[in-house]
Image 1 (cartoon, rainbow, N blue to C red):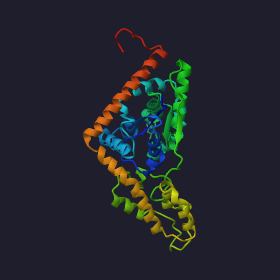
Image 2: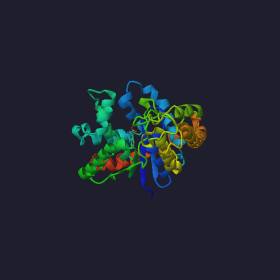
Image 3: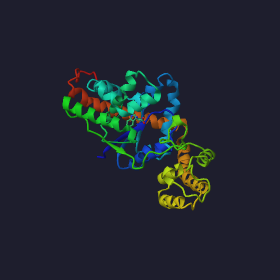
Image 4: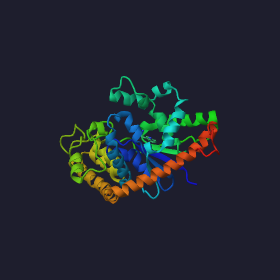
Amino acid sequence: MKRRILTGERPTGPLHLGHFVGSLSNRVALQDEYDTFIIIADVQALTTNFDRPEALAGDVRQVALDNLAAGLDPGKVCIFVQSMVPAIAELTVFFSMFVTVNRLRHNPTIKTEAAAYGYTDMTYGFLGYPVSQAADILFCRADLVPVGEDQLPHIEITRFVARRFNELYGKVFPEPDAMVSRIPRLVGLDGAAKMSKSMGNCIYLNDEPASVREKVMSAVTDPARIHKTDPGHPEICTICAYHAAFNQGEHEDIVSRCRAGAVGCVACKKRLLEVLEAFLEPMRERRLGFSSRRVLDEILESGTERARREGEATLGMVRPAMSMDYFSGKGLE
Ligand code: TRP
């Protein structure tokens, strides 16, 4: 039997190159070797968007399409919607009984996000979403979770939940391992440490060629370089970081020519554009193949159906372990 992967994202807008480098590329590479579940975490999106749930329907489809365009094969992987798998909500409640508030308060990702959103007081759902994320992962008893490094504190909590549940009630869950992308986090077009939607410094997987061109040509490079013969500092250059991520074969050569003042920023950007287009164009084609509403909804519905069955099977182990299978055999499930 294949080992199982669970990963995914919140549907809060289109995915960008940072997502690809940080997690999509991993899950695409692993889909043959592992039984893969991809969660579209719409409930988790509500932690910050509870006042506009009407945006979710479009964003759920967008994220599903981005995953399919990136190369996930719906014949192999199970893509599903979180809110439609009742077992996840049920497990969240059980797990929340033994995860302390202090453990959640000390989670560095929660702290960073709360500061970024300017929360002075956190909702119960926001503070507790790592518990819900543990249920996202454990409902299908996943073994491996490919994620960006910002998710590591959440996977730590998931491991704690699995361990503690097994100690308290008997062994039901594997203790899943995180798997972090080998490529470091992608910088933004403006040179900021992170490509992120809120900073408006992204190239999206569904950007049109003209838009990719404009973004690349106006990206921040090495501000100390005025003439193309000035020696460059590739270690601080955005474009160079993108070459490292998407053009490994030529990266070293580009670095040394930049240092020597032998390649100018414009030429370096043009080469990157070719490389990015060679990568984005097949994605656009795959996206087209899935873009009919009927095709996409069928993929999501059958994935969600399978996830519901997995969740029921897990609850079928959780309830007896907790001695809460009160009516078993009496026709009530
Ligand atoms: N927290 C993840 C993010 O913000 C999304 C997510 C929800 C997730 N549930 C998950 C990731 C389970 C991995 C496993 O991107």
